[in-house]
Length: 129
Image 1: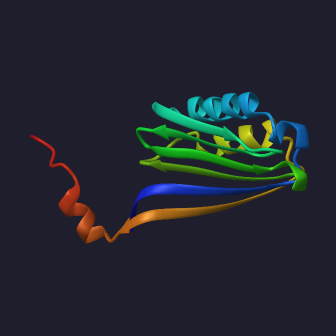
Image 2: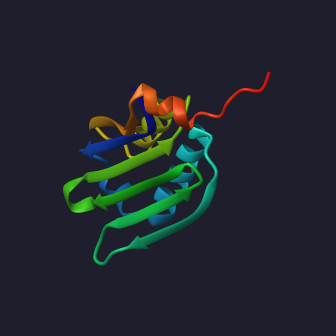
């Protein structure tokens, strides 16, 4: 089986509540994670809610990185979704966990766009002699 993309869902509990409400800090953290992944950032959108909480997304050529925070609960939900094989996938996740000072992190990894081997052969470029 071959997967078109990898999707890591981070459940970050017991985070630093002040960090979870700091939009500029969270923006920088996602950009550092994108650098760690080696992806190409195409755009972004971030919003701070009143009285608290931040949602943000980096649109990358390879898909996206997103964060949604609930400071009042010390919780952040993070998605790292990339196509292709990213060598530094786990390092980017670890960077976010450390930046948010999550004391109780959990991760769920999914393969997206799973293609049986026979179908994969049809979509791979042929090598020239």
